[in-house]
Length: 286
Image (cartoon, rainbow, N blue to C red; front, side, top):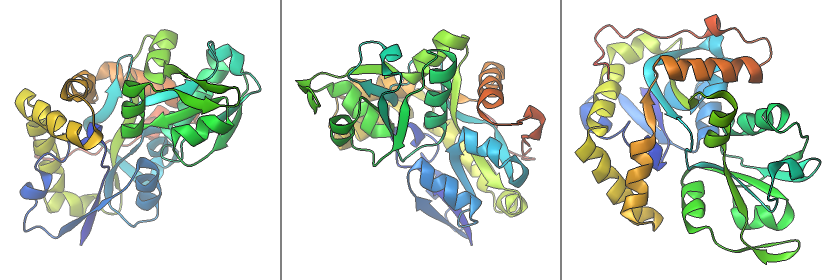
């Protein structure tokens, strides 16, 4: 039995648009969880293939194959990796407490890198349960990702802090990265365990994933996914449609340049050549 990890965030919906139908009858099962769960489960051998934090793919490059062409990236604002803060300037967070989401690895590493290289500050970081009101009630800033960030960013509601109620400032880390580098930022990559890649290929999983993603990114299908998901989040359909339209799912040259820049700065002793890209023989590339 092969196990495929899936993340139930809006930004992953195009990947598994009709993946289950395409793999009907194959000896596969699915496990769902947040990105940090996918990271740990893949490395523990509990799942065989998953979209994982880009930085984890680099940290465990010797054990994984990265699927070519697939990613989750943005050129500028991403809307789902947000720093909420009581500070009107990120520079004012020097030595202040920032709560970090427990759902992600790449976003946490990106914030740490931006603090060092863009703002030259050294906040005090603390990993907490992702829940914006409680995070900002106890900290000067809060890093929130995924659907929670999309909702909180759209609502931009008044919250309680140490100095009373107010509207937190919002900083989009995709936008901050673009301002610093001029490059896209790659948040996630699809990766397979090296010891299971041949079995995944033989079972048709890679081909099905590429085909499902291609189908899910067709404009009508993508907008339909966003509209349906909007009801789940309690957001206007237009917010979700715009979000999916602005994301990048193809790992092209610009995305690779941004990924390389990030990994070389964020991972100790990292060499780009360590990333091994799997080459599916008959994959329907995007």
